[in-house]
Length: 427
Ligand code: ASP
Image (cartoon, rainbow, N blue to C red; front, side, top):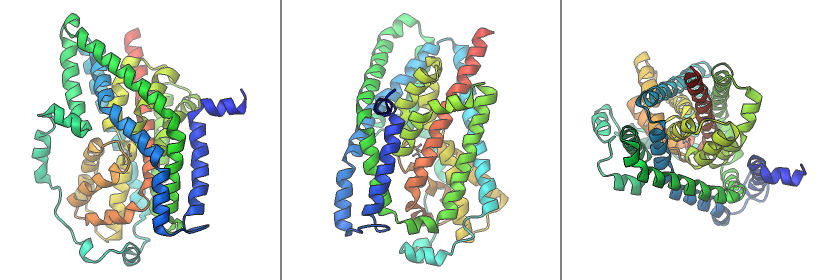
């Protein structure tokens, strides 16, 4: 195939190309290498360059709620028979908890051994980030007393407002309830709604396919903005912390290869090469949600996953299965505890493990959500949440990598459950 055609057909190559060009332009525009511009001009230039990214993300936001709702309801209804549904639902849930726990344990291990926060000096970081001593006082926030309220609010009382506000978790719960009810009712009585939902699914996916054309431009603008505004100096200062997170994320990719090889019984190299499109998109948009339609398409068209499995596992995984985010959150908590010289007892570590498992489930799959939800975990172990400000400067780059891992986790889960359900059917 001619090179030009090859690049045109492979989204990931276009995205990599935009990433590289964006990196170069960002370095030139930023203060580190080239023509350091004044902040106002740079800001306004960056806001223009971000137009394609904003358009793309708006299109995603426009279609994501109907797409997730329709996909889950259709998947559950088509799975039909109650037993099959129960096995798959319980199996997928357990699998997600297991992989997220592995990610958390890897994080606890790495953060304790490498101890990235002990190498840095808090006062110099405080000065470079303009934080006063007051800022570093512990403030009240989420506490264990809030849990009963949060649990009672899981069922959306007003589905329309959940829709309007795009509260993905409530939408997911409602989709599960509607889907489960439709699965047990006689087929003829639910058919009209099922047809409509299937049509919604097709239409939203089609809109996405068209909007994919601007992805390389979106990526270019985002990368230029990131590189030009985050100085290389900041990255070097927080280098050990970033390195620990990246190492942990790399280990998670290895864990997935084990699942692919030994449970899903797939060839690692050919499966990973098929993961490329969603992985590059996840890396560049830092949103598993924005990537979901491509993840779904890759699962069905390239990995040949039974679409009853993919339409259930991928939307569910996108919303609640975030191994990369959990790993990152735990390393960040340890890093800040070490930086503030806060001793973590066994009980605190246990609290960190449980809260980060729950927090990763509740983290919305959008850019930068992980670092915001992190404050919940920090407060439960008594670390000043303002510590997050120290991490924000390098968060985008870590967000890109952890999102790629989140999406790889969802794809791996769909391969695993495709294998398991096929085995069950042949039995
Ligand atoms: N951006 C991540 C995702 O969409 C969530 C996070 O911030 O960790 O998967």
